[in-house]
Image (cartoon, rainbow, N blue to C red; front, side, top):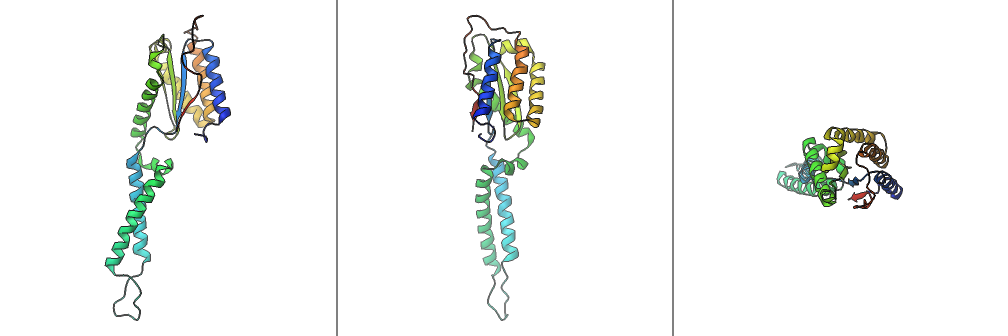
Length: 221
């Protein structure tokens, strides 16, 4: 995640969360995940594709044996098929390992619907993992980014949802997605946190309000 957020970026987001929570009882948690799914099938497809390419190269570049010629150089069809099988296996293993470490190689083989579903499930899991459903007044708000899929999700507990409405949350999420395409992730988060804060003034901070969650950007590799 270092390529998306350095220490200064994390501090900027932490500061924005703290500023907004000074004026509202909402508990804001920002989570940025490198990816929201394993996408093993995409790795296998890329590996198979690389294996097939390797087999094709073996068939093209290994010379054929010529019976009755003046040289014994070349390979019989049986030998070439054996080398092709090895090429498929080697290409498959190399391709799956390579694709597992490089999202751009997997992305073409992952349907957008699968990406959307995985990000949605991962955001819901993060909401519960961060115990945002257990805040004292039901004021949890999650801003979730999935960097590989380039998708964002904003989830809220009952009190925030009642104060802001789902329509407002959807608008904040769309604006966040647009910002992510125009600027760096940290700046997009900071602007979205402050925009959310304008709406969250409907949930003012009580005198006895305590900070139930650390004002820290959560990074998931």
